[in-house]
Amino acid sequence: MMKLYHMSRTLQLGDTLIPDYQKSMALVQPFIQALEQSTDCFYGMVLNGKYMYALLEKFKLREWSDYAKWATEAVFEFVRKTEFPNSYSRMSSNYFYDNLPNCKKLYEYDWGCESKEEQEKVHLFEVDVDDNAPQKRDMNIYDEAYEAMSGSQDVQVVFECARRYFGGDATAEPTWEILSDKIAKAVTDISVCLRNDNA
Image (tube, rainbow, N blue to C red):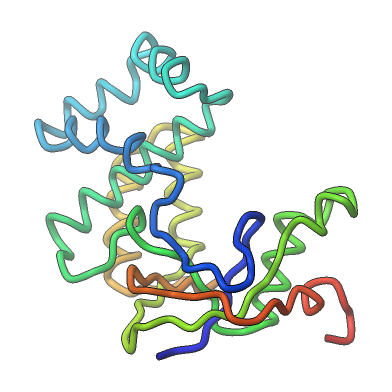
């Protein structure tokens, strides 16, 4: 059993974390199926405006950035399945952190500009993870891939980033996220650590 940290707006003390509880794999699957046909098929899917808007409407996605996220995730999942089969899937894992300063940095980045009311909806939990070998990945590499997809639809860069990510590479100043699909339970609410400068 390993103790790690997890931030959430919905998790409650004592809850067991459920991988892919938002059913995001359903958004990724069409892109993966295109990749399984051919890279050209995937390129066409990404660049085809008619398909893009059909997908946005079907899944109630409001922005291109949502579409870019699922296309990016699909490349990562395709690369994982075909080249790194022993790696955890981003879609079927929960995400954890292993140190409090990193949690606070990410909290301030994601919610620092939100109202106090919105900030207080975010909780930080200490969790027991039934996994002796969770996998540490640099989320900065994923961010590079997302920027390449959303900014210029550069699929080749996304593929390169996916290989670096699952290969365990790191940027000069990595931001580590820890993936595990094993049972995890929220055991202590330590949200005060996010909002207290002295914590």
